[in-house]
Length: 141
Image (tube, rainbow, N blue to C red; front, side, top):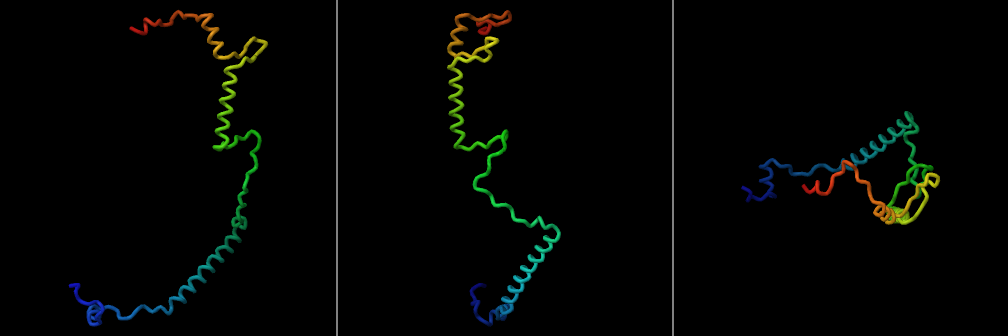
């Protein structure tokens, strides 16, 4: 079935195959006409858009390398470089607050004391036991 030679002109004629190639002389002209048509179409479309809405075709501003700082009160975007230092600063402030004495309201006698000292004072003074508090024996049962 497929053992016959495909280049044999008698076989090709019997199969009703074309013996010649497609004409390519007009292909170059067709490509040139198509290119001219497309350029003309884009040009006419551009002019039409300019007539309807002249502001629509303006070029966007080029992005600046560094954007200006936002207005006061606007939150800043945190980058990975600043995030680490901000966390270090926060931990440092928290540790200082937990280890230092400070008046919160001197007129009312309200002060901030270190956590360790507050724990010592509570242990010295003792705790009030509420009337409805559960004892450790109640929780074991």
